[in-house]
Image (cartoon, rainbow, N blue to C red; front, side):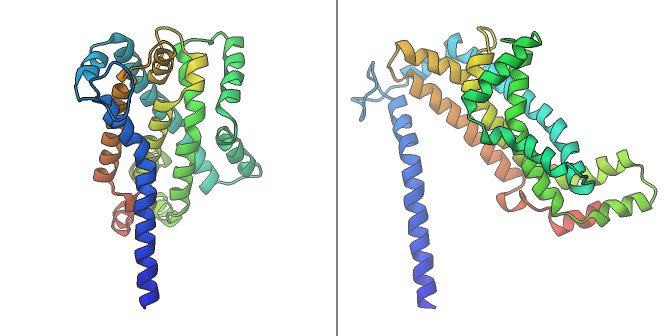
Length: 274
């Protein structure tokens, strides 16, 4: 028993150290964002809000941030439209090439982002969508589908198919069964996968760099362009704003469903859907 307690204590210490190691760079960025200096230095000589005032009033940062939010939401919605029926087909109606198709849909995860961005640039340019907002949305949908699909497939495969069969037996048409039975079971997976998909889209650099134009420029591209000619804490300040957006999303995810509910629907919910 003592060995188990020692192991548990050691694991807790390990987790704390790992968390500190991961959070250290973010903490440095956070501190630098409040620096009073005109250049990046750590520790800062003083503290000020001047860089937050600058970036929040600068259209060169705010317009790309709005573009990133809109793009992330659109990419997540369209990716869900593709991922949900694909997951239903793969889990409930497997066919001869279902494994190959699932591998194909997940393949963007295994491809270097820059190579994928170049391939998308050639393809979208060939069909007249190069450097357009529509082409940019398509590119982000391609990279966000795997996160939604994998999450939905994992959750849907763990649900009891008899719940949907009972709905059919009681005379419900397929669309009503999907809307009132299947979709509620997939709601936690949709929310969790959608959150990850949004964050991936919000932070994407390579595809946004090659597929965007001056009007559709995203925040990561704007930050990259700013760093070419500037080395001041403004970038740290806008990065802190980005981190706040991410933290708000994660808190909303935890508050809405809780981490324990992101993989399996509760028994109570399954009984209610049945």
